Length: 98
View: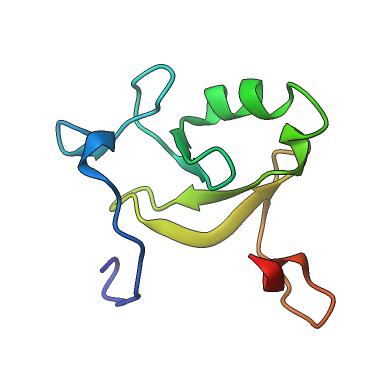
């Protein structure tokens, strides 16, 4: 529950928690992004390094974590732009297959 809005969210494994916060798997700073394809929590800096590595990594759709509760939001980073996007879910949407 975040900001008084109750949503069904995936449970985050306790191995990702350090001092009450989810940490980046590479540098141990506070995580701000979750990559489902890599099953990894990352900070913004490490996410940029990991996902610009090759054309396959650029395809990963990463979910932004809420700044206060660190639960997944409905905002994503896609491709090499590193810009936040809100998905459009239509009949040809890539999000229908996730």
